[in-house]
Structure formats: C-alpha cells, structure tokens
Image (cartoon, rainbow, N blue to C red):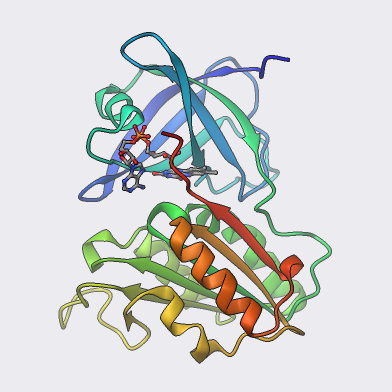
Length: 253
Ligand SMILES: Cc1cc2nc3c(=O)[nH]c(=O)nc-3n(C[C@H](O)[C@H](O)[C@H](O)COP(=O)(O)OP(=O)(O)OC[C@H]3O[C@@H](n4cnc5c(N)ncnc54)[C@H](O)[C@@H]3O)c2cc1C
C-alpha cells in the first residue's frame, strides 16, 4: 500500500549553527499535523535521474496546548554532496515538499514511573527533546521526575537550541541541561560559559550521573556510533533494553 503523502510549504528558515538549518513548514493540504513528540517525518523527492528517494527528520515542533497544529518544524544538518541537503538549501519561502508520517515510537510513555530521564543527543539528535519540553514540564510538575539532557556538539557555535534548553532548565529545577563540547569549550563571558558544561563526548560523562536500573529511562538519539556506545555503557550499568530507547540517524544512502 502506498504511504499517503502531503504537501509542506516552507514558511520560515533560520540557521541554528553554521551548517544546521531550522526549517518551519505548514501542512498545506488543510489537514492538521497530529504527532507525538519524538516522532519523525519523511521527505520524498527525486534524484537528478528521476529515481524516487526519501529522508527522515525528527519533528522539532513544540506542540501548542491542545495538540492540533499544522506547523512542522525540523532541524536539518547540511552534509556536503547530500541530495536532501541540496533540496533544502534550494527551497525558497513558499516552496513545497512532499512528506509522509509521522512515524516512530521514540516517545515518552504515559505509563513511565521512572525517577529520572537521561536524554542524550548529538547534533540534530536533540530535536525530539525540544518537542518533548511541554510533556516534560508536565511530568516534572505532576510526578517530580528528574531530567538530565546531555547535548553533544563540537563547539558552542554548533550547540543546537542551547538558549531554549538553558531557559527551560532555569525555569524547571528538575531539568538539568549539560552541553558536552568535543572540540572547543565556550569562551569566558559567552552565554554557555557556566559550570554545567563538559569537554568531551556525551558517553564519557554517563558515569557522573550514575545510571541505575531501578530509576532511569534513557533516550539516545543521533549519531549511530554514539547511540551504540551509550547503549552498551548503559547496559553495563544494569539498564534493561526496555529502559533504553533509541533513534539512530542512519544515512539512507
Ligand atoms: C529516524 C531518522 C531521523 C533523522 N532525523 C534527522 C534530523 O532530525 N535532522 C537531520 O539533519 N538528519 C536526520 N536524519 C538523517 C537524514 O535522514 C539524512 O540522512 C541526512 O539529512 C543526510 O541526507 P542527504 O540526502 O543530505 O545526504 P545523502 O545524499 O544521503 O548523503 C551524502 C553523503 O553524506 C554522507 N552523510 C549522510 N549523513 C551524514 C551525516 N549526518 N554526517 C556526515 N556525513 C553524512 C553520506 O554517507 C554520503 O556520503 C535522520 C535519519 C533517521 C533514520
């Protein structure tokens, strides 16, 4: 059965980092865009020779109260020579792409009774967590769940949605935002120059948070090598497979 596709019209674009764009679309067939934070869409297009192809993108949209929206936001990391990269770079405001979805189960589960969420992402792998913020705010308020977000980036310039996560952490004491910079630390006096940053890869800092089989549920999203490394490490702390939820940004090419 063919998957149903719908048009998305580009309404906004801004650069989050030197090679990462935040793209805002509106579903332009008049239908609402129902989704659960953590899900992704697929964008369908053709290679130059006419062959059909598609790429997946996590939804970054922060759902409005009530949930119904037509807005579709994604963060796209441009890769040299990338087919979808060329498509998105060439899009003008008002242009449309064809999409399908939402897909995936990388979502918060209403029945979770854990003490803490360990949310781990590299690069655009933090977009699902941006979308989950209202749900997390509710869970922090209603059942006192703690949340630690480890966000991996090479440098402060490449940290995605850092200001938003930092503001959320300031407003919600149950939420800790820990940027991990693999190459370059923030300069003194810059916005992210505060105590809660680390120098290295996200997986190097798990030990500090003492993951526990009894209390933690972990979410891993982004670079497949990071996801595998953290998955193995978390199993080493005794977490079961059901407590480790994964979304790997594997390349479709
Ligand atoms: C479930 C899922 C969700 C995803 N969500 C996102 C998302 O939210 N944002 C996002 O930017 N991407 C996401 N991806 C990856 C995305 O689908 C594409 O793979 C990516 O955008 C590259 O597509 P492209 O057509 O531009 O490059 P391609 O034409 O597919 O590849 C061009 C060249 O770049 C290499 N390459 C591909 N990806 C990368 C990379 N990340 N780093 C370095 N080299 C690369 C390829 O191996 C190839 O040599 C997701 C993937 C999956 C499976």
